[in-house]
Image (cartoon, rainbow, N blue to C red):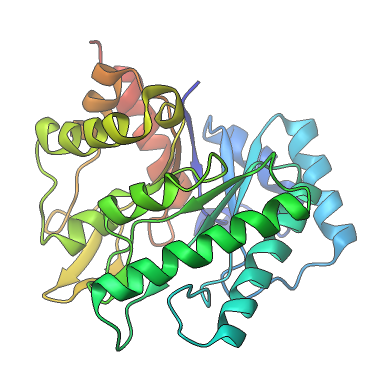
Length: 283
């Protein structure tokens, strides 16, 4: 089944008097949402006991939870010491993901730095092979590790690069941020066909069963010549992208991803809007 939910707690979560993520499942029910992404973007600072408590609340509430690993990860950093830190960020996030009862871990692959694009991508691939080995050694192979498409030109993470990373092993599942793709490609996502081309490429390269339940981030994003500038809300009518053409393409191709809204402060509201749009489409 396709799932919709927010990344983190929206402004209205606190506006309604909620204070703790253990209350998120109750809040999600108010919007008829299915899932939630917890961000460790600034680092994993949660206690193990708190992770177990949040996990229990989600299990009891019948909601799925995923995590976003720290933003500091960069598998193209030439220094081995920096790479080791990136491995640890992912593995620590995976440990907490299991405590939370989730299955999906999203991470930013790399930044190009001073290397050529080709060399940075090649090094990232080699490091993701090492990460794969760490994942199996630590017993995390029942989880999905989701390299994300990135919004800035200087970041590693085009759709094609992410697909190549996912060919390394079945533990890797694409995290496709359509707002990032649209920003990186200067407003490229407008029509159903624009989305179908990207989706069909993934299916062709990775197979339908692998792609059927892939991970999605969606928000409207302001961009400049260098790509992503900042996340917006669905009230924006300048930058896009629009969700409806993607919803049509997903239904046409019978894909049922896990869709996370990353709107700026209205994540739950915009996730609910996406679910409403999706359910209104009859193919």
